[in-house]
Image (cartoon, rainbow, N blue to C red; front, side):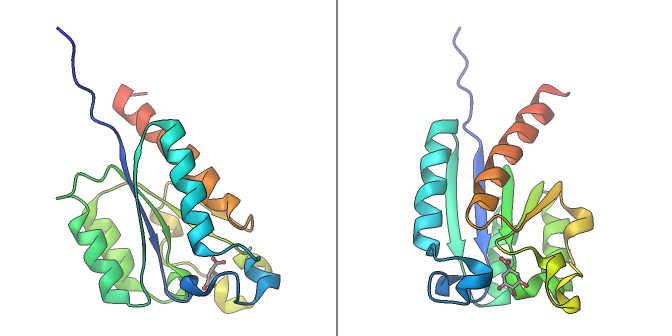
Length: 157
Ligand code: DHK
């Protein structure tokens, strides 16, 4: 009997000001728009055979609502760029912990090569891993890494 295998569902969350990518401080964030990053990530998701949802919000509570809804939406893994909330948001950390969904933290810029207040992340120690400094490629690598990790977890490796 053939068994239906559920496609992995990956949620990508983007925090404040990331809707301004392309126009915003290109020396730090590059010239790629968030729309282009989303399109490229959807293309990779299709190649990898996973379902991708891609969201951006300038509001902490909206990001938390997405994280809280994720288990009910059968999200298997999260890619999150909390942007400035990376450095401040205990609430996003708590939501990620409560969701119990494995996640990868991404940043376009290398936060460790910038101002000292950006060196602290509220979520790095509870993430599978962090990818920073590679612009839009940070998201591509995160998706590849997350899908590999989730397949390993499903196989019990
Ligand atoms: C994006 C932001 O908006 C900053 O507040 C973070 C992050 C870094 C990024 O590099 O993607 O400090």
